[in-house]
Amino acid sequence: MTTVVEMVTFKLAAGISEAQVAETYEGVNNVLVAQPGFHYRSQSHDGKGNWFDVIYWENMEKAKAGSAAFIDSSAGQALCALIDEESCKVLHMPVATCAMGCDPEN
Image 1 (cartoon, rainbow, N blue to C red):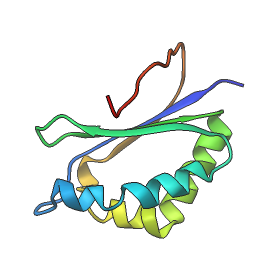
Image 2: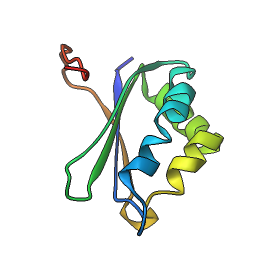
Image 3: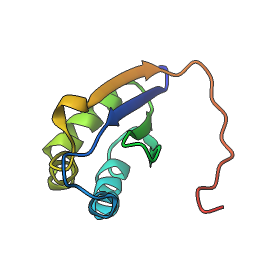
């Protein structure tokens, strides 16, 4: 089976702050880490209003199930309430190649 990357791009709803999104980090991460087939998640933004959520999964089946569990969770609903729904795009793509060596704390 092929590793899958889930790429979610979005903008925040009007009046929502970066601090409000930060309040969802722990809950969302806890939900995702508990999902079978979860490998990695990062969330970032470009400072111009565009946000990027990148999640690696073991395979497509587990990616779809993990996404559904996220949407059904209270943590997922809390994050989704902060997002401009019209701007949200979700892609699930097979990974062609990858390398790992980042430490977000450095």
